[in-house]
Length: 65
Image (cartoon, rainbow, N blue to C red; front, side):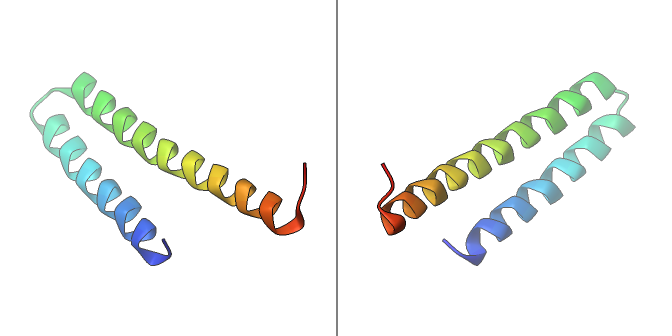
């Protein structure tokens, strides 16, 4: 779970930036913004899931609730 998540997020960022640039050059700025928003939502979903696992682990370690 360590560094592979960072590589996933960086890969999505690079891929989205390439798509955004290509779509913007083609004159499809609306689609470029939607593509960027979709990438952001995907990464945000991953981060929220990781935070959920972190909180569960902290509860288990300290035996909270």
